[in-house]
Length: 298
Image (tube, rainbow, N blue to C red; front, side, top):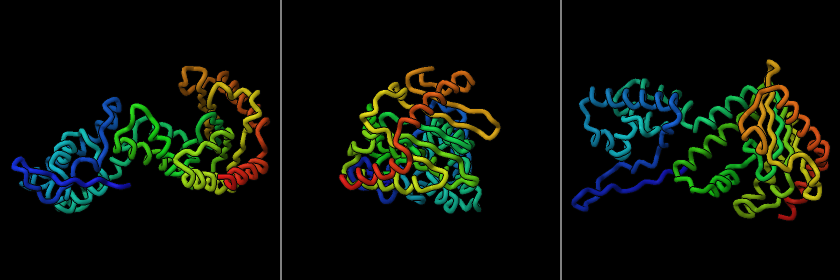
């Protein structure tokens, strides 16, 4: 992930040596109370250790190679420090690894709460069912494809917000490395394969990724051709996550306010719809051949 370095300028117009502006980090979500509490604690510890070392914020910022503004924001719990910030702070303050150890706490809250909640659910799931009507599931997206999609949001995301959302989406793909492997079923609309999201090369890489993931024994990818319109997915995406204890959670765009549901009656409706969609889509082998054809045309 690239970081934008800027030269800091003093009030007399001269350049201030060293330091970066406060881009390398993420804003704290004020609605994420648990995450904000963690970042506030980390910031307080950093300030106490800096003051114990008798270092001014400006000197500390210069020593670790970041802007003074960022130091104040991190210590006030208003900015989430990245891992390298904590590593440099640990070295400069001779903390013996105690500051660097906070990277684990920060890593757990650096993504938006809704992304963390979704990642936790996916990490527990033994089966995932997903029909997407207008975009590929986040678990299937390449980094380039995901960045292009996030870039279409309005109001537009700030660069650090976009990076944060992208990191969270990519981190969820660790589900493919889990053992035992969960069963994953995806039904994709043809239009999501043909729309050149991010440009031709980005889309080619995305199609190649679908073919790669589709070879996994625990993954089934099916395509719903555009001429098969008479199916119960016309109301939007459908997702169901099933867990080892027999419980499940699901959601759909057109009902229940788009909120996750766990009531057995509501889940049965979602599974019924998904079953019909899955039956009407191309079989996995046919879908693979279809994706290869689209790739050849791209």
